[in-house]
Image (spheres, rainbow, N blue to C red):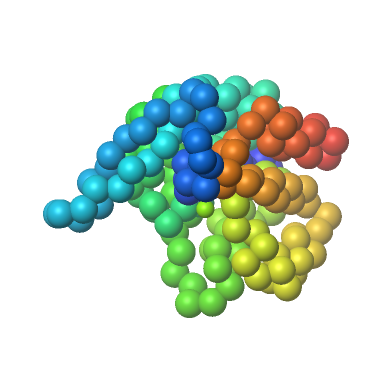
Length: 162
Ligand SMILES: [Mg+2]
């Protein structure tokens, strides 16, 4: 089973809580609706770093973000990611966990997100139900965005279990 790497946008790629933003990040004003623009900070090197991680681990990259398909038009091209598959969320409860559980199914998983702690019980249940599959929940602080340390955490999780 090909491993899966899931990427959230706000937090991991857009370190919204960082003040000031770390070096390398550039501001983009992205239109969200007719009148409103949203400032998003992105590191153009993240795309290459994530693509290398996927190549090294034989994994597939996919989006797990409330940006949904707009991640492919608004975020990916700005950091050098190709069009990726999108995990869609249709569940009233359980945050992203039910959709990701179905999408990842029996594939080893590394997942970058800043909100795993929103519901700790569901988080534990999600990981528990996937045993003995690799489930690397890589928590990314929205004040830092994805760093080399997060990337190596995902790399290690796959290499120890493949
Ligand atoms: Mg987030």
